[in-house]
Image (cartoon, rainbow, N blue to C red):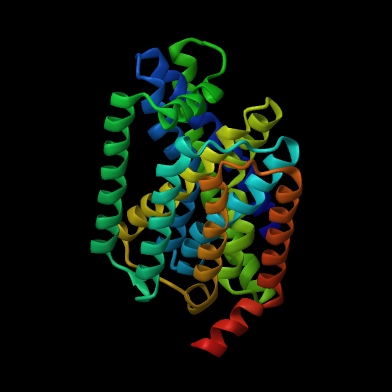
Amino acid sequence: MAVIQILSGFVLLFVGGEFVVRGAVAVANRFGISPLVIGLTIVGFGTSLPELWVSLNAALSGSPGIAVGNVVGSNMANIMLVMGSAALICPIMVNPAAVRRDAGFMLATTVIFIGIGLTGTVSPLEGLAMVVMLLGYLGYSLWHDSRTNDAAAALHREEAEELAGRPRALWISLIELLGGFAAVGIGADLLVDGATTLAQAAGIADEVIGLTVVAVGTSLPELATSIVAAYRGHSDVCLGNVLGSNIFNLFGIMGVTALVIPVPFPDQIVQFDLWALLFVSVLLIPFMISGRRICRVEGGVLLALYGGYVTVQFLGIGGVVAAATG
């Protein structure tokens, strides 16, 4: 029964996330909202919506391990699974001018997130600060890109255009949007309930399920979007999508969740997974600075790293490291 709940949750989160993003982009286009705004805000929020619903649901249900694990694990999956898969299909071309700002802010949010995590709990005040910093960054980015029309602005516009799809009636887009929200909400309930039941039955810690099974499920919209973009030869959109999604996950998802209820960090995540997240985040920086492409071999390495990370989780090595260093 738990497996059926998890699989059903995956399907609803994937379909719902796709409907929300595409419906929201279509509605925004109909009302004349610029592609820059769509790329910076709607796309980033829409692809992170499954993470938000799942983390909120898990925190309110008394499963903070799933809530925090989902955020950390989704960022790990975005960098290694999503980018690795996209690079295998089509090497990812990196334009340093287009991604330098977002890459720098993603690394900064990761460091701040780790600092907060080391305190043991994300309080409502810290959650508010995270949301305010995210809104401030988005506001600055919109102001700067609209004035300069530089490479970063072009990348965000390309993200919006990639998801625009065919023009359709406003009422159809609204149905897509509302139906997507409903599907994501139901999918989040099923996924959290199923994951919690599975963890209890198998004797696996909530945080391990959150870091792996739940994180992959909530990252499906990013994975699908990036694979389609890479197949079309727009692999640079994958990079912009991952950077934006990771920023939204750390400050938006965790910030909003902490505003509703304080979120404690499990020991394993504090002692092991936060540092793993920092490692893979720093791993991207040489590509951002040098302008080198992420080739198929490097994509394969990212996927291998992700396979190793998941294996470590289920072997319980992360928990052993936490116990030894705690």
